[in-house]
Image (cartoon, rainbow, N blue to C red):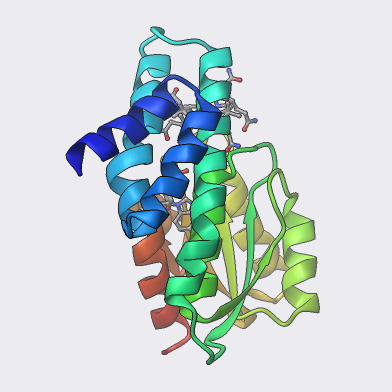
Length: 214
Ligand code: B1M
C-alpha cells in the first residue's frame, strides 16, 4: 500500500500525466478510498515539487507539468469521491471561486467536490474570478455561502475585497463567507472578518455545515 502511495507521489513529481491517471484508476479498482489516494499519495508529489520550486531547485515548466498530472489524477478520482459521499438532502447553496489574479484550481475544485458530495449545491465559477462576478452570482442563486480560494500571498487580499464590497453594498448579513488556500491563516481569517476558514477539503465541509447550522 505504501509503495502505491509513493508511486502516486512520484508520478506527480515527474509530471507524468499518463502514469498518474493509470495509478488513480488502479487505486479505484483496488478500493483505495479516493481521499487516501489524494492525501497520502498524489498530494505529497505536488507538495514536494512546490517546495523544490520555492527553493529554486525546480522551474516553472516542471511546476506546470506536475500541476497538470495532479489535475488529471484528481479528475479521475472526483466522480468516485462524489459517488461515495453522495447524499440527497440539500444542505445549502455555495458559490465557489478562486479569486481574481489566481489560476490555482486543484484545491478549490476538491473543496467543491467534497461540498457537493456532502449535499451542498455548488456553483463553481472557476479560477481568476473578479469580486463583483462572485457577488453577482451569489445574489442570483441566493447563495448561503460564498467560498473563496486563494493560493498566492498577492491574491489573498481579494478575499478581503469581496467582504468589503459586501459590507459597502449592505449585503454582508446575507452571506456566510468561507475562505481557504495554502497561505490562509487563522490570523488572516480573523483580520478580514470572514465567517469560516479551513485548511483542507474535509474540514471545509465541517465548517460549511456549521455555517448553515446543519
Ligand atoms: Co503555483 N504557486 N504558481 N502553480 N503552485 C504555489 C501556490 C507556491 C506556494 C509554490 C512555491 O513557490 N513554493 C507559490 C506561491 C508563493 C506565494 O504566493 N507566497 C506559487 C507561485 C509563485 C506560482 C506562480 C506565480 C509561478 C510563476 O508564474 N512564476 C504562478 C501563479 C499563476 C497565477 O495564479 N496567477 C503559479 C502557477 C502554478 C501552476 C499553473 C503551474 C500550477 C497550478 C495548476 C492548477 O491549479 N491547474 C501551480 C501549482 C500546482 C502550485 C503548487 C505546487 C500546488 C498547488 C496545489 O494544487 N496543491 C503550490 C505549492 C503548494 O501549495 N504546495 C504552488 C494541491 C491542492 C490539493 O492543495 O490548493 O492548497 P491546495 O488546496 C487545499 C487547501 O489549501 C484547502 O483545501 C484544499 C484541499 O485540501 N483549500 C480550501 C483550498 N481552497 C480552499 C477553499 C476553502 C477551504 C479550503 O473554502 C472556500
